[in-house]
Length: 427
Image 1 (cartoon, rainbow, N blue to C red):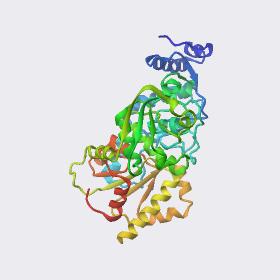
Image 2: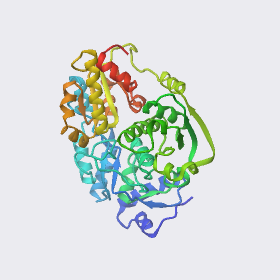
Image 3: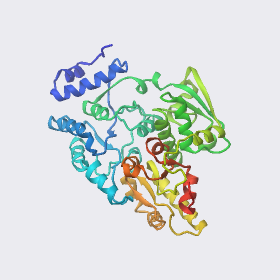
Image 4: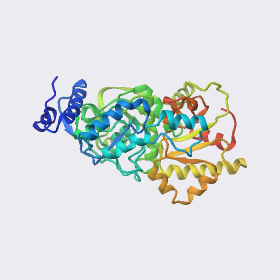
């Protein structure tokens, strides 16, 4: 079905603002028609967010495309944040690993970042997968239409903030921002935001966010779940602690499945406003129990060459940690070390967060306390670190189900991570 365009949109498609802009518009139209969209709608958010943050040499076609856009003046109509940088010299890496990072894998990082600046990058600190954190400044309002692609950011914006965005692919995000329009389908529509699954959480203790998200994501895949039974654990207020939980939970639903939106009864904006009216007729049901979560974790494959190896590195913060999470983890690590009679963590450990959050954290008393424990604070993307073949072969552990899904890192709960980094022991 051909999409119905307004005169302005048709003009862009016909070349009113040049050949390159016409190609951008054509790309968006073809994308929309592939998903049955009948029209375009304006992007209404103040800022955009891009998923492609890495100057990977094999991405030369992307760099060439970006240069064509820059040369034609077809830059973003919004300033944007972008996913985390792939390299941080403070993160443990040996000589050969660093050589691969800097000379082979991400050799184009500086030139690509220069392109991003010309296209509309917000600032030098705008490299994070959690762009919606207060310190970063890219927090869309309820009902705003976005053109994002980063899966963990999309699910958070849709679910916790009540914005509207489809799970776009990389590059489509910048196309929507340049044209100022995105095709209207899926999670932009009222019907597309209705829940086709009812999830009943009947656990005897607060579910680990990453495990609960994993179990739900693998069950519903790309569908929208309406989750009941969480008020016992989360209450009915979207405070800092709850939002951090939902950040990690949502990232797991999006990476272990393909969830772009979830509703939590009595908590998330649309569930508060519409309640069970959000549930579509004929919705399927799934009950989450302690046993379901235990089985979910037990079935994760172990990708280490030696499953019994001593972990060589630990990552916490994928998606990036919030300011409160950094403070809470600092206290937890201190208490864990004190209880075991240790002064520093026994496994090299990296906490990752947004550059702007890192700067604010470093102004607090907690920064020196965390550094004293031996934990490294970084802005890096752990996933990009693990893409290095020499890092991939290492026994790396994490509390992130997203990192576990996309790399060879091994998942442990937060309590297990704390135990291992403060008391040691094998996997």
